[in-house]
Length: 83
Image (tube, rainbow, N blue to C red):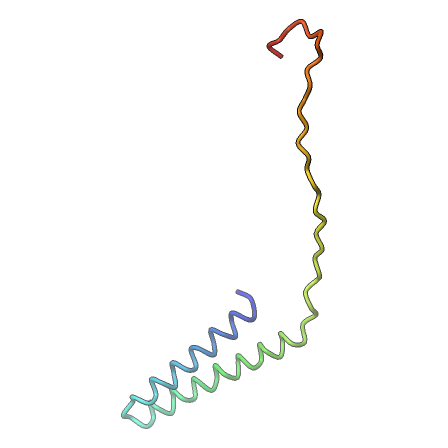
């Protein structure tokens, strides 16, 4: 999984944890869920720092070649037409 996908996944999981925390009635459970969300956000921030400090991907250049279809010509004095 690339860094961008990992960051997105962690951010989404943190958001889900915060939404779940809103529905919890026990304060200690709510605090654990919010702490988990904060940990996920911190991990996502670290991955973002890694992404920014990573060297840019190598630029790939492609050369297009035009293919020409040429009909093969059979020599006229070919004794065996099955070739």
